[in-house]
Amino acid sequence: MPAKLFTTTPMSPQKRATVVSTSVAALLTVFKLLVGIASGSVAVLASAIDSTLDMAVSLFNFFAIQKAEERPNERFQYGKGKIQAIAGVIEGTVITLSGLYIIYEALKKLFQGNTTTYIGSSVLVMLFSIAVTWALVRYLLRIAEATDNIVIKSDALHYKTDLLSNGAVLLALLLVWITGWDWLDALFGFGIGIYIIYSAYAIIHEGTMILLDEALPGHMVAAIGEIIGSHPKSNGYHWLKTRTDSNANYVEFHLVLEPQMTLEEAHHIAEEIEDRIVRLDPSKGWAITPHFDPHDDEHINELMFAGEYETKTPDA
Image (cartoon, rainbow, N blue to C red):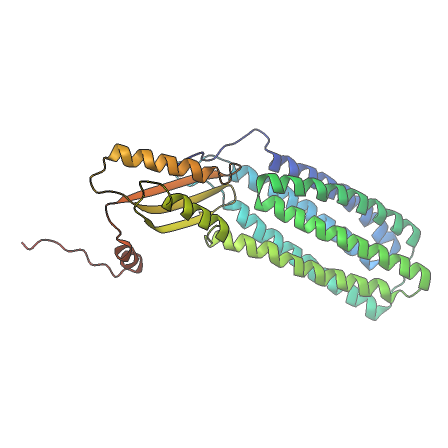
């Protein structure tokens, strides 16, 4: 008995967010590349490369969300919500690779001793980048909070990382301008690369956990268990299983009821329980599947799951 399952809109907030982030990343890429190449600043060039990857990833995220919002069909009966987790893992991997490249460029400049020029122009570009990225992060965080979408959360996280790295680039440029020590630019670029790799781990981890069907957060599982067990006509429950694909939450459980109860009564009880569960997070789709038991047979379920349950057939 699924409840409130999968809804689509012509342009959902999360899709709109990816369009905005792609456009912003494209704008920043152009400015940073022009100044980074002209100035020879490894920190600015690193930031430009990061913005280029941001643009590609945000564009990929748009198509990932579009696919994830497609309604279930005969072939994909649970929908394609997990494509967003795949996108998150890919995004985290791309960010990691960009961090490694930035580290490579920083080390190359450190050992070759290249000079940074056009520092004034570089500072202006980074100030502009910080202002635009700050506005984008605020917008993405608001959409992520409203939708709890892993793709938008990933986008918000890595643009937040960009905001911090842009600040580090600006500081590096100012220090080079004041001291004349070009190695500071390389040192900050190296630090930015390390931080980018570190931040990517959270994105990869969350996406991987969704792909592995990790249970809903502990407080949510406890609340669901309380709703099932506290129904006045419930004699207990077992085999409660939960997972999410970021778009929808999935809940399965075995509900113990009186053996003499009619199917219609059991159905009505399940609907009451489902309505309360859905209210825990109305922003998500829910697919809730109850199973009715006349007594607690959890041990049999455990054996069946482990492949150790032997069915008995009457003697011939």
